[in-house]
Amino acid sequence: MNVHDSERLAGLLEDAGYVRSGAEATPDVVVFNTCAVRENADNRLYGNLGRLRPVKDSHPGMQIAVGGCLAQKDRGEIVRRAPWVDVVFGTHNIGSLPTLLERSRHNREAQVEIEEALEVFPSTLPARRDSAHSGWVSISVGCNNTCTFCIVPALRGKERDRRPGEILAEVSALVAEGVSEVTLLGQNVNAYGVEFGDRHAFGKLLRACGSVEGLERVRFTSPHPREFTDDVIEAMAETPNVCPQLHMPLQSGSDRVLRAMRRSYRAERFLGIVERVRAAIPDAAITTDIIVGFPGETEEDFQETLEVVRRSRFSQAFTFQYSKRPGTPAAEMDDQVPKEVVQERYDRLVRLQDDISWDLNKELVGTEVEVLVTEGAGRKDAETRRLSGRARDGRLVHFSPVGGGVDGEVRPGDLVRTLVTHAAPHHLVADGEPLAHRRTRAGDHWEAGVRPKTSGVSLGLPSFGRPATEPAPVGGCEVR
Image 1 (tube, rainbow, N blue to C red):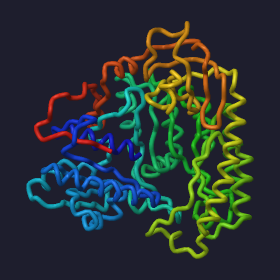
Image 2 (cartoon, helix red, strand yellow):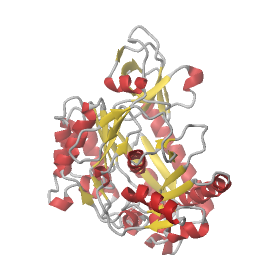
Image 3 (cartoon, rainbow, N blue to C red):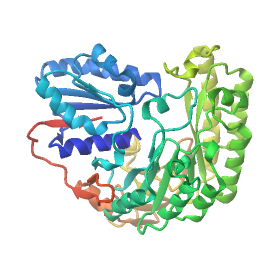
Image 4 (cartoon, rainbow, N blue to C red):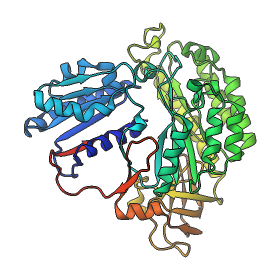
């Protein structure tokens, strides 16, 4: 969601006359789009701001803007700690950035504008898409849950849903410009429809995406186990372009801890969903999020988490050590777990999950995978002469782009069918000759250096445009 907001910020700035700065250039505007889920986000922001201060001092007129969740949380604190920041804006008014930059230039003082409620739905704003082949599509913003460890509802507000027609129009428009994969975004996607009173709206939306001609892959993130219903499982199984992939946060396998987290489901319900998904979609890759060391977590609680991990057999788990966030109920709870205990449990969980991931990946050796080629996904691709991409189930695949099945150069956005020859805990390798290679419009656009740029009109079509190469009248910008 933060990546997609950054695309909106880039689109707003380009519409205002800015262009992206070159890799070696000193930008006139630097925008930090921040997260506040974990404590290290605070440290990284203020560290980066500190490193930018001498750069700004040596470049008169340079502006620094800070937006997103951390800005919504810290507000005037950012300017107090870093008085060289020019603009601070929150999660509800990202569309104000160009105006605030101009006002700061004119008034020669910092502009801090934090709204308490959403001004306009972000998808009505222009966006400069980062990818020629994959697009983010927001179906809702905000969250109605009250998890005791999470600061997001306080910073993003209550859930707001887009109408299905607007969502499908954006999906169709992206596909019309060559995008072959969309990811539906929401803080809690399967609660979609609560605002207009249709509890089955998300399953219907998945099925509707199946009727969009030319859309090859549909993903979504993230559902909440409490609202996960069988109609969504049926829609996933019966809609061919919905990928066999499910990311569903567990957070803890202990019912006692889940109750303290205010997660409103229990381990057996979670396991029941996993079981029903696997029965309907046998090849589904199921991933999750887990927090280790939540306040009051005992060794017995942790053992229950390990048992749910063993039974669920996740293809991957995103594991986090509990991070105290001021303003959340969990931050004030007694029995905060000592750091060394959290670290030891975290290490055990990672070892267990790595073993499970590796076992599951080894089962895929010798099988055929369809890979959507991505850009720069493997650290060693240059030395191994492999390319990388994602299989339909979301697994990372490093593959050889050379062989009889290849039609010219393989480019990001193209589709390749190949055989898995090797497995590792976090990726697959396919070193044989590709079986087939399909050149795509997205690959053509990547090769030409163009990306979709949505106009921001809800039902309008996005248009492609080659990134500007001439200096902008006001200056370049860097969006992070």
